Length: 117
Image 1: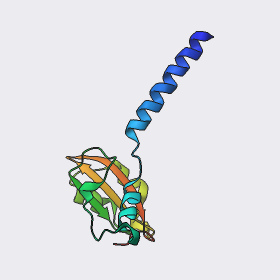
Image 2: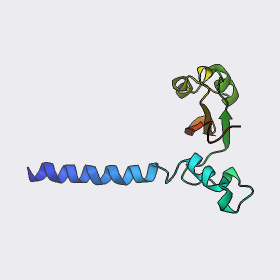
Image 3: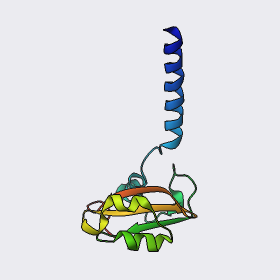
Image 4: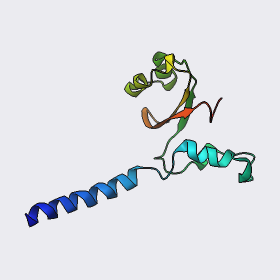
């Protein structure tokens, strides 16, 4: 019994440690929202200021009604994750995709009532 509790405690500790490293402190959209607030005193910001993401080289923002084929063509590789958003039939979000090489390293739905491009 003690051994089982000890193993569970180790797994819980490792799980918390790993999830804290992988999960950004705030979403990209939350950071942009904070910067664009009229009380922030800022009139511009750079996407390179985004914190909490693995290194990325290119950011894409896909508009509502963009097909999966167009997303993949724009990215230059097939991203299986694009299908799950069914963006071609939605008008409530933009899809932000951060890429490094030929790998999507982060993506977020950006609600149109917050960010309408």
